[in-house]
Image 1: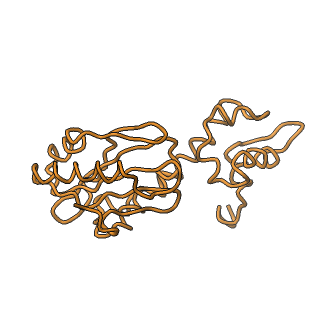
Image 2: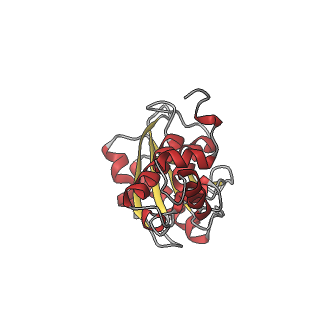
Length: 210
């Protein structure tokens, strides 16, 4: 209370979420063991399910859910737009909007960012969840939400669970098909952004948009 949360270590912050220790172990010691699951980094805990946390002695269902909820809340804060309708003018801005939310997803998720005529975000919509190495999205699913909401343009986005955002041949082919579908519908595809682990690739920046 006197010095603020920023003065606390990762283990101390986690100990507050855990609440209390036991006769054998303090909350701070238990928090250190939880952190070890993520390689001694809070970021490493982002992919841990509550069931994994419950594998540690001293972590029951309530504590596991509290930790998972705290991590998810932090992720949502990090990925939340600064305003209700942020303007997206550059690929870096679109990537930053979704990076923390998508960088550690275990499966490919195909997302559409819908923009108005001022390039302001109308809505984000997840279209499909693929396997560990592939995601497929049909033009009908990709553009149906954009049509309903009167979007002027869209930014396509999906993550690569490998952490490497280099476009594959399938990514390039899918982008070509979706750009053509967008032209028919009168909705411009302004970019396709691939999210890796803290890095991204932009079809617009790489001049790969057809």
